[in-house]
Every structure is written in C-alpha cells, then in structure tokens.
Length: 386
Image (cartoon, rainbow, N blue to C red; front, side, top):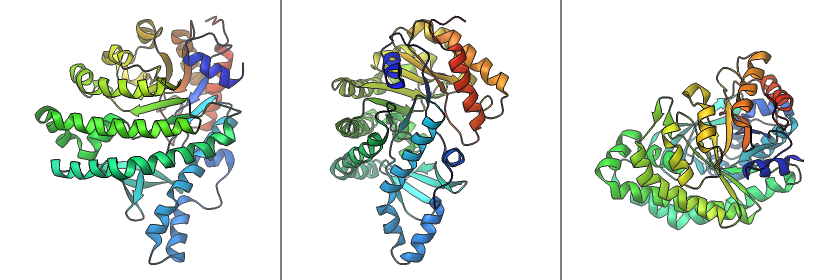
C-alpha cells in the first residue's frame, strides 16, 4: 500500500499493511531545522515592510498574510513528508494584524504573535466581545463579509498546497484554533460566555450556529479544491474531564457537529474530531455527532486507550496517544518505543488506528519523531503480533 491507500483504508476501518502515522502539526522552528530557514523570518518580513512602507506597512502586511500562511503550511507538509510521516493537516487562520505583535480574528479573539525562533506563533490572549450587542455586530460581518471572503481563500489556499502533494499524501484540512466550541467561548471570554450558556441559551445557540455555518461554507470550498479529510479542531476537555456537562454538549454542540459531518459526508469526505483532555464521558456523543475519527486520546489526561478501543473502536478511527510533553520532548528512544508499542497493542488490532502525537509543541525533538516512525514500522505491521 502507498500512504494514500493506507490512510483512507484506516479511516474506513479497513485492513491495512501497517499502522499509518500522522502529525497534527509541526512547529515552524522544527520545520526550519529539517528544511533550513527561509530567506527571511516572519518578523524580518514585518520589519522590512515597515522600512518599505512606513505609512502603510500594516495594510501591506495584512495583504500578504494569505501568501505567508500558504508558504508556512507548504513548508510544513514538505518537512513532515521528509520525516516519512504518512499525513498531516493544513488550514488557514482568519487573522488580521492590528500592530506588529497582535492580531484579531473574525470571532472576536485577540491573538498575540509570539516569536518562535523568528516564526510567528499565534497565542490566544482574550475575547473582545463584551456585550450581546457586540456579538450581533460580529455576526453580521461573519455572514455578510467573511463567509464569502474566507471561502474563496480556502479554495485558493488548499489548491496551491494540494497541487504539490496530492500524489504523495492526503493533506488533511483543519480549522486549527477555530473550532466551533473554542471560537465561541474564546471570542467572549470563558466567564462571560458561560453566563450566556446558562442565562441566555438562545444567544449561545445563535453563536454556535453562526460559527457552524461559516465552517461548513469554508469546508465546502476546500472540497471544491480537492480536500477529502477534515479535522474539526477543538479543546473540549481538561485533563480531569469535559469543559461542559455531557448534557449541555449533547443539547448544544452535537446538533452543530451533525450538520458539519453530514455536509462533509454528502460529498464523500471524512471528518475527524480533535480534542485534548479526558473526553471519555463524551465518547457516545462523539459517535452520535457523526465523526469518522477521534484524535488526541491524550495519555496524560488519563484517557484509557484500551477502553476507548473497546467502546468505540468499531465506529471511529482512533488517532494519537503518543505524549508530546514528555515522550516526544524529553524521552529516550526506549521511552518512545515503549509508548508506540503500547498504543499499537491497545488500539491497532482490527484496523482503524493511526499512530500520532497527541498534539504538538515547539519543544518536540525531531529525533524523537523519527523514533516514533521507526517504532511504528517495527510494531505496526499487520497482522499485529504484539
């Protein structure tokens, strides 16, 4: 099997020759270590624009954001394939610079542009929506301006990247840091949004519906450009359990996810849910939402991979379970091999498993990722003999 056949078979819970491998992302500092740095770092580009356009550098910067994101993700896919990883995901961010170190997005979030060895690393600071009235201003812009603008951008962005790699892999699409739940609460801030969640349920539903509509619009444009696999990227849980009760999850988010998954399925695509944390109380609802796969399965959040496989492994392709904070950052080769062996033994039997880092951070070591791939090839050949 080539990796395209291998990935698609795993997502269909079918037999494969070996366990496929995946990364949710690879931070730009590690991309630079693999490919070499670009001619200019992100922050050098900003400084050059200030010199060339002293009175209009901010507008000039926002005009080249799409090209910057396309280049960043193109390099990232190239680096991941060079590591012999089977698949990775890409996805633009709806960000606009307001100065040289801060950005805002269309959902009302203030994002700080942190410096990751010369590369911009977006980091959520706070929400800017502090009233019901302000939400409706944002909603109007999302519906009347941004849905069309970013749908067109999605098609251009993915077409350029997919053209380079479609013969080598299935390039997944993600709405990284822009999931339905995350975008909703972060735009308002957790405290304010939770008050609306319990005290103004119609508003909360309206927020979720608006973001879902926008996401579907973008996903359909990605599919117009050839996308087949999507990753709905959220953080639904803490290490101790879900951020909201299963009842609220079922009432408010499951209907949104069902609309999203049905839209992707209607055109023959697959869609995976990514969420960190202990999501075991939500497993039945994740299946009900219509997802084809579940990523993260975070080991440090006490996610029991054996339990998850037994409970939903015949309904969901499972991805993840290799810890990034210790194993892929500080771990020895023996530590990496042990983690990979456990994950394959727990979840690979019968198919429907893709080995992956549970998330990604910029301190992950390239050598440890290489060990993860080596171990997958050693332990992951079918039939699984562990």
